[in-house]
Length: 436
Image 1 (cartoon, rainbow, N blue to C red):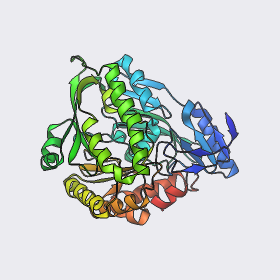
Image 2 (cartoon, one colour; image 1 turned 90 degrees about the vertical axis):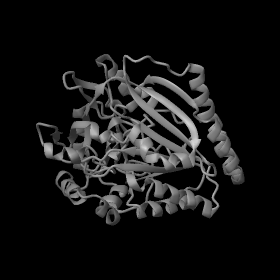
Image 3 (cartoon, rainbow, N blue to C red; image 1 turned 45 degrees about the vertical axis):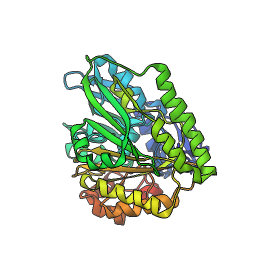
């Protein structure tokens, strides 16, 4: 279906565009036709998924290709536990698609509203020192190049390009199919509790090493860390899921409605933020349960926010975090949203924020109705000093000149872009800034 463009904006309301045309292809052939037609008209074209990137990476001033209808399971290789999905499939749809085959994705982030193509193309990740981001699960893709040609990249064809197209920033072509390496379905035993921040920081390396998946949140102006430790169990293990009422109270009443109220109060009366955070740190997430992996990894977010996240070498996590903590204190800011710290294994994906190094991620947030600029700019300056790489889908101001030295294969990626999209059909302002 094709229609005249209306106003499109992303989830966080940081980016808005009025595309000239909006198309909703439901098949690979339809995507090819859209690309060929846009090329004939000399119009730029971008695919969008759920709009969950905070940056303008998916901004489409020409043709906006909405992949909402390009969803579902294409094929399953039972012997190798691999599945091929259409690119617009949302992450929250995947568990149900995999369930009949007894499979699961090895790791997920804490939000599952994104499309699979958008998630891998921006470097979405979860936590766990032995696990990579979602792009490391990719064993093959099919994409449409700017000439409208079908390009398959997998273990049999164009294998040398897999490290580039698995996290392609939307710059190399339009993904239509993605093949993922899955694992047998499993459970997670979740322990979420508040702990003294100094104790967590003092034993951070051992906590990360001893856990399958460890992360923590810190509410500024408090001395508590909200820790989350998930331990992998076989699917045959006994489940102890949260009772429906408890889940609703934790995720909707406290995590949604109460947090929304707290953010609104803190925005109106900034001086109230420390007291609100101390209360939040004590009532949020003191629980233990066992459930299917996807139900533990991801939580629904009800409060709209803006986010910036940097990956730093794992050994730099504590000093970088301490610098952010001192910054907030020194500036006298009143920050109502927590700082999040997660971890990931090193990988060989060209433009991955964890390329070549075990990494920790430090993310800062602000309520969407608050001005985030000064806070984010100051934190970004700290992260740059600790060898930080910005998450491609989250707010930052780095450009190609600064990013080139942070990625060993940056120039190879740009050269591949020159080959697959010489006329920059898939270009937009964000990509011009970060890739040159």
